Image 1 (cartoon, rainbow, N blue to C red):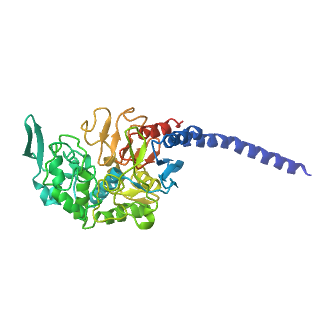
Image 2 (image 1 turned 30 degrees about the vertical axis):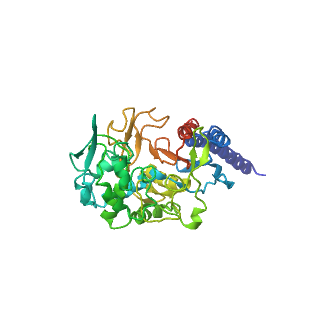
Image 3 (image 1 turned 60 degrees about the vertical axis):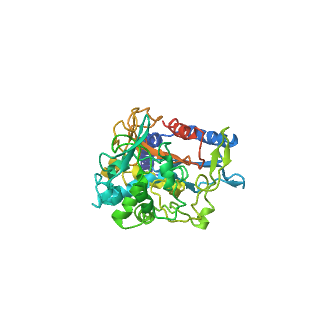
Length: 423
């Protein structure tokens, strides 16, 4: 063979060697960018299973995304323990207050279209709210006094309207007489009502609240009221609004207020924690299994009514984490998302470093909520589910369970198990 052949062969080998050397830092860098130790993340398996083995949970689904990629997804235990039906990652859960985030997004999408303003009084859309009252506790009982100003949409989004779920002892009887508070499951449940949500919220305006508008952070019917506002501002029912503006565009096919009979086969059973901390099957009705399949399918509760799956809800969280857009579909503007996910209430929600935005709890100090980065946000639901989104770490963390009440500490442990795996 000619000398030129060997020279070319040597030059090619040298070029390939140089390319391999140059690519080594890139491969190593990619491992660092992923930033998560799979072996340490797998600790979640044993912890979740231990709650099932001890009988403290019937079952659960955990899902973790980092930079939009699934890094952990696991179903443990049973969707129906007595029937021997295993939990799956496609199981459907009652998400209760996780509904609030979707209703808040609908309201803010209407804001972007000029159909409402944050400082609008609720009475612009529900006239019955023009004059509300507050029940003040005194040494001799209770005084019902006029609110010092009208409640605004901003008050509702931040839970500073003074509206509770009507279960406090001094107002519980009044709420029960109107089919709310103790007469609505544990206050927030309306899936068994024959009337549309606006009828329920019109009646709510006649009841006294527990604090003056803007003076305290009080958790309650705020987002249910917003659901009616959204209907009035758009002239569409809330289920259609959520489907057309969020779940449809994002491909969230299992997120809705009421399920078909076929979907009902995937709805997990509700359990309760008994006095010993063991999971026992919950009762039928508003304080247990609910009416998410058999209706009456008329009341769309913007604060607590939706059913979803872990995979479906993660798409919604990823849309928010990515500034209002997912897979080329924009739901909200980036600046609107920034408004939602930044503290809007100062220290009214907490003086320990947690704030509240327009629908989400926010982490304003490292250590205020475990290992969340500053700028993280999230919330959970009465049936035990919880989620956290950490834009700095690129994380969306979701735990789905249906146990009411839930006496376990798994909602605290799961995020810690995720963060300890970051590198």
